[in-house]
Length: 288
Image 1 (cartoon, one colour):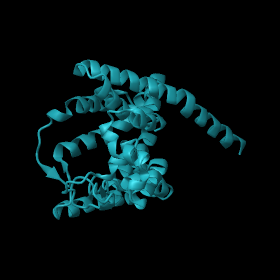
Image 2: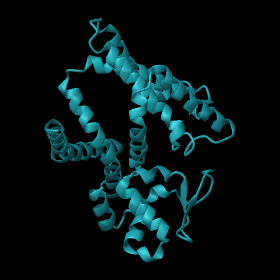
Image 3: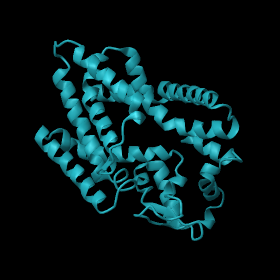
Image 4: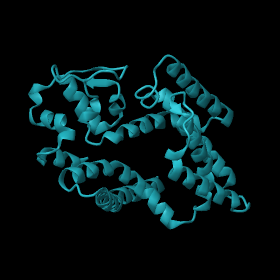
């Protein structure tokens, strides 16, 4: 976030963050609530979950509710240094419920997942689908967190099993096949706000993950990739913007540069931020 802030302030071409830059340079021109929301949201993340529910009026500089997604004003996401961090806001809210959910039995979890799915059906039936209703509304997003818990329980059951790796290999290659050929899946229309191919893809991933984890549970390279995934997710957008503004060569060259910068910065974050904090956390836990 700090790197993005410096880039926003120093770059003359940063159109994608133009409104944020103007607010930082001329805060007196903006509504107080807008400034408060932007500052609070960038620091504490959770308020960013409302980014898809608020639109920004350039004439009045006021943020106002937007439930239809049909208006010319931009969404509040334009003010966030790390726009994809809004998904982390949902994750943090889930952590508030997780102590209750992880103690629930599987039947209760599947019932909660069904209620979340049923709510999707109700909303899409009344024309409320897509952002923010089915991708930015926590009750309809809850199904994915719950199925993640179910997936982990499957992993716990097979973790020490002596069965052949055939099922794990089959699950792994099914997941790879789905990831590679997802956009080639036939389209059978929409169900509860997602295409049928989206639901099929999600089921394959959810079922495959426990067996794939078992297959690579002792693989250090796989663990490293897992550790890198979080900082890669948080930093890639900045480098996409930077490369397209200041470098912009052929698509292949752009992708290679973006990947290089993203993985390098992610490794730096991992070595000098994530690992030291994790080491301190474990030290405090052991001492207590």
